[in-house]
Length: 353
Image 1 (tube, rainbow, N blue to C red):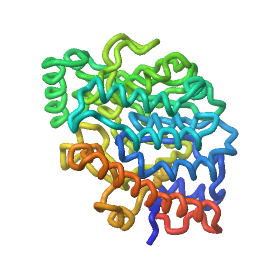
Image 2: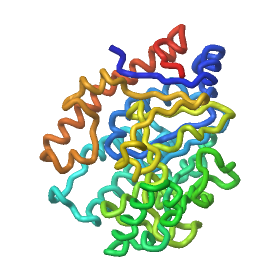
Image 3: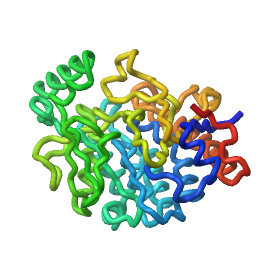
Image 4: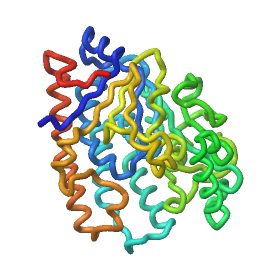
């Protein structure tokens, strides 16, 4: 049984067949929202850096929302392996005083995890990395969603959800996409289209706030107000607009790599609740997707990867034990990737569309 599934567009398959896996193969990296689901990708991220990206020379765009942007920040550190270790350990150890912690406690715990991962000099590493160009995606609230708490925010979120049932375009009435990227970074009009997208210069001083904003789930985290350099207002989880991203809008030039926790994607957060929008399989020609196979997922404890609902449905000790077993099992993804990269067939076992 292969733990890792490799799904490749036709243009990407042609490049892989001709060049094989090498450090400068891809032009962009995409990281999705997903909270604790990231734990199943930690070992793969380590292998990705060690086997592929460590020797990179040319710039690479790293576009991420929520935990996806945090994973990219780890890869941008001077010692990515140590940063992933720190973050993974802090994430597994997170503790709350009750099964339903308040917003301030969750925000404090998340801030601690992020700053533990970044360590001293980590924000500067993200802003000034020689080749990993971070695009940290956030959603700035408009109107009622510009509040950080209260009944008005709840009403604004409800109206945004109702509008999204009719068309995704109505989300622009409630949210603006704000992307924090290094000065002079090229916009991404295909992947990050619409929503009057604004680009804000990323610097050492606003990296932590931008990352926290990118993961600020309303009513679970505090909204981040007035991020340095950006438009005024409350900033929320970038996954509200770009949960797993619109992969069918991947740029037609260059190759994009998407390590993901599933072969299926859901474009925006509110689409999770719409059966006709959730769980699609994208087919862009320029994409290389790395994800757990269905057989691997079925073999995990409880037959699934970690997710946020685990906090409410199992005691802390049981949850932590289950998460640790999933992390240990995910080493199989890294081993499959190593065999693929170092093997004689760069497309062995790949699904090509």
